[in-house]
Image 1 (tube, rainbow, N blue to C red):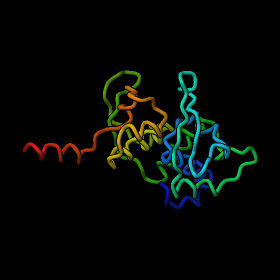
Image 2: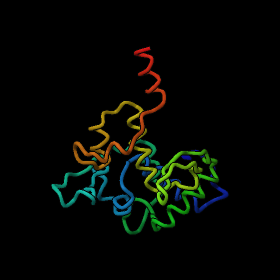
Image 3: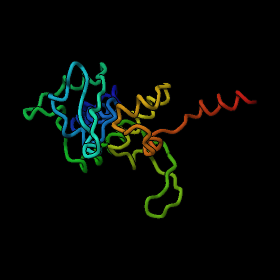
Image 4: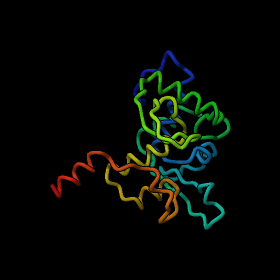
Amino acid sequence: IYNFNLTQYPKLIRVRDIFVFQCLIGARVGDMVKLTTDNIINGNLVYIANKTKDENPEPVTIPLGKKAKTILKKYKTTSGQLLPFITGQKYNEYLKELFKVVGITRNVQRINPTTGKPETVRICDIVSSHMARRTFVGSMHAKGVKNEVIASMSGHKKDSRAFSRYYEVEKKLKNDAIELID
């Protein structure tokens, strides 16, 4: 998505940048839209996650990598916001369009939220802002980053039971594990 040429789709450029930035920082969309330039401290993004602010809040600190910094350099908002955000509803709507344009249309399995039964759907039809958060956690997990480190950057409390919902064990890791006993 990051390198896809979107010059024919100008409205999707901003959506792509917001989504990729969110994939690089792992923040909840509700926290991300509130971030300002004041949240950047010594090359780190520092904020208090809204979901945990009432229960012994601890700042979330995420080092900003090259791609994240490149995206931020593209945008200077008059309000001081890090990125020119659109409504959550439009963001999710445009993400679906972005995934289709880029060609990310593979089929995935999910549990239908209405029927509770498994179904196969195209990923471009169900993508939402939350997928960026899952991508952040899953990418880190796949690279072998310790869960405590990932959780500290994604705003999860220590020993959070919810954290494990954010990643799936990769097929290669499962195959490697089986080979250990085969």
